[in-house]
Image (tube, rainbow, N blue to C red; front, side, top):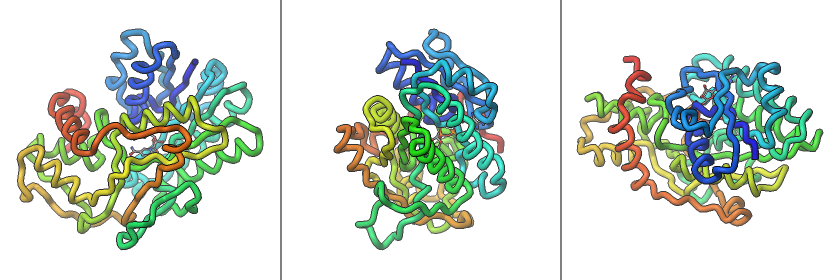
Length: 324
Ligand SMILES: NC(=O)c1ccc[n+]([C@@H]2O[C@H](COP(=O)([O-])OP(=O)(O)OC[C@H]3O[C@@H](n4cnc5c(N)ncnc54)[C@H](O)[C@@H]3O)[C@@H](O)[C@H]2O)c1
């Protein structure tokens, strides 16, 4: 199968390319990536060097770039995006341009070619925020959309467009909405790698507000295995929620990192909360589990240890990305 992955130099894209390369040596892999501040060719260099991956430096908003790549593909897995909520609060424009318009350019190219699958990788943040005091509530495939940051709203726009191309043009679209990922190749602007790299540099870990905001964590390799299974066996027109049943308050995540790294609570620094900070996310992934038999394979604590070790061993990967 010829697979075009957009955003393959990003966190999840790079992990996905490594997973497909390992598990499906028969597939041919191409990635299109604009190498924004979030794209790191180093993350996929080994795949390029062994001839497993063709890298194309370009923008998903460019029809000229996208058209020939989609024509040559059987499957498109679309991950390229602006992905950081804080950046979307400071300047929403790149989010609208890449996440909404860029997705539109890809879908237009896709509908002109005989694709087997167009898979859009999305987020649980499109469904807004859950209350802390109703633990029985989780996001399901019938939860309404209620995005609350420019990032989440731009991803919601992409989701709606992709579904519209399924209904209007019969494009074989699938979607996955996943909870918070962590693991290797994650930019140090995000909570877990920020905490680890700050501690490795002898700095404190900033925690927003009271630290009680709850996220539902998944190891990136488990998310990638879900994407891989949905692309191969998922039903066109379907949406799958991906999560590993691991709800934790941010402060607890930071405490576990401190414990692994042998540091005390004095390394925590509480900072002013993010505006509109969603209180809680929680995913009900039963549809995916029942339909495709997918299961997460990694426990949070074991995967967190692996992640701390990865950042400890790969300073050359993250040190150029930390500016202050
Ligand atoms: N990280 C998470 O926890 C998470 C959870 C659920 C869903 N997602 C979604 O998964 C996808 C990947 O997330 P990530 O964390 O790997 O993001 P990332 O920011 O690490 O990577 C994004 C990649 O897209 C590339 N890119 C950005 N704009 C582009 C453009 N206009 N043209 C071509 N390439 C462009 C960047 O260079 C980068 O390599 C996103 O769509 C995100 O919304 C992420």
